[in-house]
Every structure is written in C-alpha cells, then in structure tokens.
Image 1 (cartoon, one colour):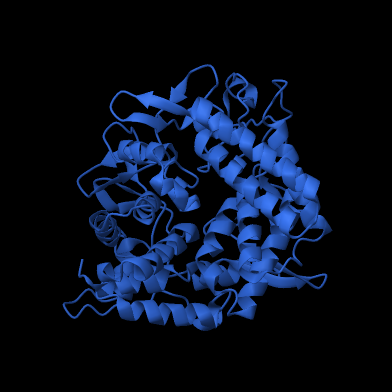
Image 2: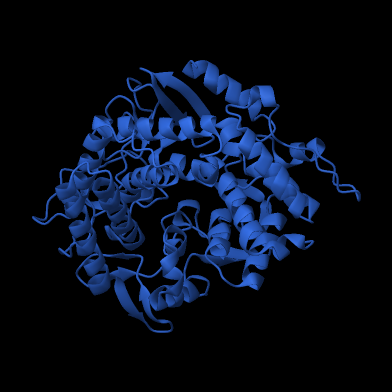
Length: 480
C-alpha cells in the first residue's frame, strides 16, 4: 500500500478514536441499560484482519460480566491490527510496518509490544503468521539502517522530522535515540516466533548480520575503554530530550554494564547505566544464544552471546542491588558505577516493575519482591496519588500524570487477586469515556489525558484481560 494512502486510511479508520471525550460521548450510550457501541473502525477500513483475533474477542467477551469492561476489551485488544499495520510482500518476502499510533513512525520497541498479545494465535492463522514474519524482516532492515536508532520510517529514503538533530539522522530514521531495549525487542520477537512455530526460515543472512550488529553495538556500549561513537543533541528547551555534556551523558565508571543514553520513554537517562534495560539485554542475549545453538547457525557466536549475558548478570549482582533505608535490598533504576544511584521507576517497558513480565522467574526473586514494594510506595517519586486514583507515572509526562501502562504492568506482574482487581477497577474508571487506554492521565482528572491513539497501551490492556481470563477467570465475573 502506498504510504500516503495508508495514513489517509488510518486517519479515517481512527476518526472515532481521535475524538475528544466530550465528542466521544455521542458514540455510545451511558444510559442505565449500559449498551456500548463498538469504537472499532468498520471492517473495510481496518488495516489488518485476523479471524483468530476476532474469535478470541468473542470468546473473551462472553466471560466478562462487566459490560463496560467487555466493551473496552473489544476496542483495545485489536487496536494494533485495526489501525496501525501496513503489510505487503517486498521481493517475495513479507514486510510489516507498524506505526505506534498518532506518530507516523515505527519504533522497534513499540512494534514488537503491539503485536505481542497476538503471538499465541500465529500457529492457527497463516495471515497473522506472515504478519509477524514481515515485522521481523522489517526490523532487520531498520537495524541494518542504523542500530543506534529507535524509530524509523517505512520509506528508508525519507528525511527525518528531526533533521536538525546532531548528528543528523540518516534517511529512513525518524530519530536516533540510543536505547538498549530497542534491539532487545527485536530479539524477543524473533525468539518467540521461532519457539511457537519452529520456523527458522526468517533467520536468513540479513537477520544474522543484524543480530551480530546488535551484539557488537552492546559490546561497544559497554565502553571498556571509556569511549563511545554515540552522541545525540537536539535543539529543544526540554532538558530530557538530550543527554548532558554535548549529548554524551554523565561520566561513568566501568562495570560491565551497557550504557543507554535514553530510557524506553525516549527520555535521556540521568545515569547511563539503566538497570532494567541491562537485565532485558541479558535475557535477550540468552535467547539469542538459544536460537544460534538450536538452529546450528553458529555455535561459537551462540557461546559468545551466553558469555556476554553472564557478564551483565554478574555486573547486575555486583552493582545494581542497593540497600534501601526502608525496603532492604532492591534494584536501583540507574547507576553510574561510581556509587551514585537513582531510586525510581518509569511506567514504560522495560522497567523494574516489568521484570516479572519479561521473565516470570522474577516473581520469586526476593530482590524483585522488595523492589516491587518500593515501587508502589510513597518512597518512589513517580508513584503518583491524586483525587482520581494512584499509579505509576513517568518523568516523560511530568509530576502529575499516571500511566495506564504502569497500572496494567502492576496487574500483569501480580499474584494477588485483590491487587489485580484494584488495577482493573482503576483502568475502567480512568479511560475518560473513550473505551481506550491513553499514554497518561492527570491524577485529579482522568479526562485530562495525553495521546488518544496509543496502540501499545491498548493492546497491552487486551493482553491483561486475556491473562486474567486464563489464570483468574473469577475476576472477570465481577461488576466493577
């Protein structure tokens, strides 16, 4: 599909989504009979249709007693497929470009996360399987274009909106914010696809080249010699849009950890050794080791990945676990290797809260359990309480905004039914009558929100409801 036509179609398809809360009230009924009209675009205007996803929607909806919650699930879960997909075959290979929502660019992180709730269905739906193959292929193109970039255009000759950034992004790059997790997400997608399908055909020469570049980039950003080729300067009055010291970041002492100049929120790090992203890198390198070993692509490289993962794990144990005055040993969010540390979290993934989402083994980790108690306490500067509710926020949206994504991640990592119910109730009460998740909302007024079209948050909400349906179905048999 031509890019201009794709965006025009998307804008038409998501017209209802983009309405203000006041306008949105006319699109469905809030009368006593509680009839909710779907906010999805008509089938003919959806950017991708999966029959298995439609079956899943119908199945899950029947199990949800709360009609408003069921309506929210129906709107949110398919939102990525409904509104953000540009799929075609290029040179006889599937190619999938997925915009993040209200920004006409694809993030390596967001695109993986956006399709993640559909992964269990790819062995039942050939079209969906091809879509994931296409996304793997597209992400490879992106990494080969620039491994330090976080977001890309489909047209790899397009000049960036941020063309004044220093250094200037190469054509095809939307922005060049170096974030460890961007590359980790590409490994996460490839690994899960392979494990579910046993199809190694996506691991072609380009994929192999891209993965070696990923590992080399991680190695470079360990900065064993104290230097890096990376610099990022943006002409802006927003101080978190660029690292300090001419875009190179604060000084660090060598630890074996990988430097990340930006967080998953696209905000500059305070201290460049970002702990949740390093943990994600170790998890990802182990997955890469497994792929290379099982497919026998290169056993030596497989072992290199495993050795690298152990280096990071050892560094986490040595440097990232800190004694908190009130919570004992917990994971710091960022450190610099000189003993300085930041105690906080950010609602984006990877975060400290999300560790048990990325790897369920963390649910039994005593350090994680302590950390989690810290994260939902007044000691966390970005755990925000207001007149509406409470929840995790992000420096990205200031001191007064709570992130639905943070609430969702709290529920996804919880083993406490009451806590999960609290999160579900909060999400129902704060969608501002739109039927969708948002990036954030004001702690005192949920109608004051950011990003009306944020596909990752929408599909993540769908993922939560499906998980609850599988593990705690009684929670969905409650009116909230």
